[in-house]
Length: 228
Image (cartoon, rainbow, N blue to C red):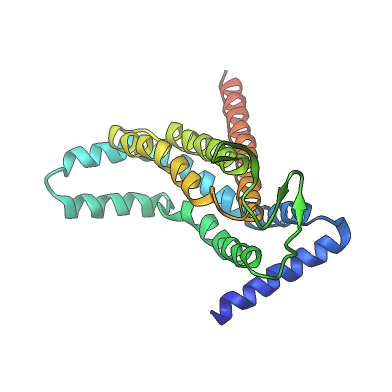
């Protein structure tokens, strides 16, 4: 608990320092999110390259699955060998998320505690409360979690299109709908300051993916023109 509190104090200190310059905690959260994405960008880039390698290796992996379908131990050994030879880490995609998780947890504790003023606002919502945009009877419409669902769905869609193989695609198709629903459940009644951080981080991740994929597409076109 002490380590968590130390991280919470650090995050609050950074937020207060930025708030002292910009005068708004919502803007301070967005700036912190930008800084975090810059810090983890090398890992994100490595993750995207690893995803591309895994996609390129799918035909070879499918052959191995067929060849060793009755020998799970040998299948696991051969798959690990291919990953090792090609410098691919299947779990590498989790690293950027794991690095961000402590900041996410620290923000959560900061906004449910007394470190942030109760009346801290951004746009129409109070950052320490869910963003109740409007009420439909007893039902509250919280916009930020819904936007998070959209961003998460697009991210999963990109990951699904970046993979091949029937088994892999079946798993990814399941995640395509499960992950957004999970995000809706997690964030719907969470302090909107935390939801704002996750939303901005997800949106920036989509922008990074767009430019990385666009860069690869342009490189591919250049290589085709060069061969001609």
